[in-house]
Length: 333
Ligand code: AHM
Ligand code: MG
Image (cartoon, rainbow, N blue to C red):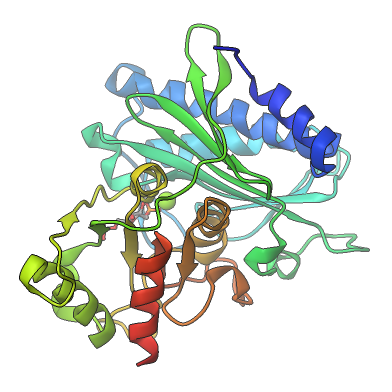
């Protein structure tokens, strides 16, 4: 098989669609390189003394793991000096990170969840990095949080790396979704799937059902109907998977279909679910839509939500089109 590297793919996509100028290519390559470094650290585990808690909390009040902090630092350092970015924002930092003024300022803004699925770090289960790329608003001089508050439809690129049995990078720049596998010996990203399409029909769902007693009626109805199986209203049996790493759950859905849900629930009415809009839901929604799937918050397209805060949360329903449409329609009923 002819090996197509990430760089070759980005150059070819630019030639075909004119969507990846050199500075965006540099940005994607730098993020991909940082993901290689994170993958290396993750792979060392106890041997690299990277497991366990960092004895600190992030802005969401969650205990940070050592690898959360290490991954955040790797992404910040890799992306500071290239001249392609104006600012960065991360799940692990309360405020935005403008590019230090010793470096030239670029036209893009990068958001990331440096290591998603933190609860899985210490138990050797797949985890990942999620990122989203926006353009700095016209005329911006000093970046502020407000400049980041653009709906997901404004993303120019989004992707994730999954650190599993293989390390993979899944990427979209608005022309379909490609997957690259890290060749660990060569240290290079090699394209292993082109134009991934999520199967429209599915028999698999992913939700943390330990929260079932707190669900709102539309979610409860949707899940109950699936659990009723062949003799229930859906007329077929469903299977359930929950990895507790969104990256790994979404990766499975991209490959064999399914629906992923993290709804808001009755526990804290003011808290819109668990996942964050800007660096978890939006990039995943962009990827899922580019792969022929759908992503909503139960009411509307996630990518059309106007963000009000950097760390805002959002209910998430994403994956195979027919299932996401069904559970969304239950919310309107
Ligand atoms: P994190 O960003 O702190 O790791 O939290 C996000 C993760 C998702 O990857 C995953 O889908 C979800 O939290 C799992 O939540 P739960 O602990 O309810 O199973
Ligand atoms: Mg996270």
